[in-house]
Length: 262
Image 1 (cartoon, rainbow, N blue to C red):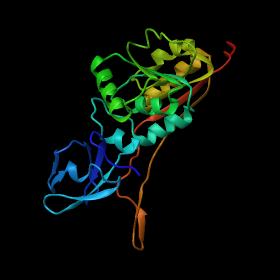
Image 2 (cartoon, helix red, strand yellow; image 1 turned 90 degrees about the vertical axis):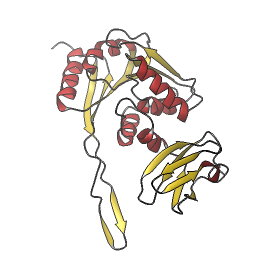
Image 3 (cartoon, rainbow, N blue to C red; image 1 turned 120 degrees about the horizontal axis):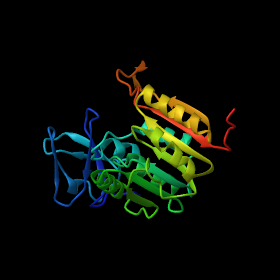
């Protein structure tokens, strides 16, 4: 049985499907336009319970999934959407035991996904050039994954230097990842992979050109993930009026034996 405890994250869902992320604390209140929700009405009860507000409205209380948490967590930079997080993990073949470098840390959505995927037997080195980004990512990861010895945050510019060697994956959420291709090629093990997330066509084209020019990278592929939700109400089944369409392009490439100059 999964019970809510003080200190847990709780996702409140109101009657219109709006979602709010709170941290449970004894005697605290969560205030909405529908009235106050007492944290004490949730603490000690089952995940998925319904609670009444002070104005008599009913809300749903759930422990957030990682998708919920990454959408609702505090942020400085725009976070990578869950649909893209899933694709990054699968297309990058991120699994337990890998040594992964990430740049930049941002608000920590990709960092959290990587740390969970590699497990405690793996390693994640998360670089960013901004101390405030590192601190925001550190706090967000710690809130969702308190015990994460596999994760190390580092202040640094990977286009200038990558300290680690023998990496299995390099995951880049940077505006100019082509500047990192050479250093990534030096740091990756043979067969290792680069995974990059970029918002525009011009950016992934420049990255593709840099990967080809390096000659150590092959199987260079780019995809875009679109999610089209549907709604079902009685006999009416139709696409939702809104969808999460373009957010970015995911480019992957494998480090291979260098191609000949010809």
